[in-house]
Length: 82
Image 1 (cartoon, rainbow, N blue to C red):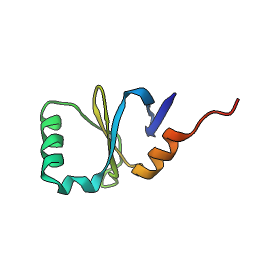
Image 2 (tube, one colour):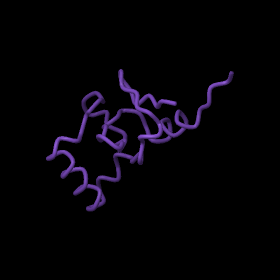
Image 3 (cartoon, helix red, strand yellow):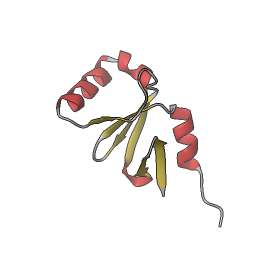
Image 4 (cartoon, helix red, strand yellow):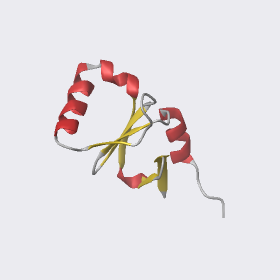
């Protein structure tokens, strides 16, 4: 199964480690983690300017999405009905 993160980006759900609200940037540890990831080229911004709502940490990179954590959570829980 895949998770649609916004725009044209989908990732395998098994690769998602954590989905963080953009407000967690106020925590020093989270801010440091994101800054290091940005410096090392692991951040991929897929949101429109000033519409950032969440960080999606995967096994390969970190996405900045304009979709809220709660919406991404709901999408990740959706199952296909056969």
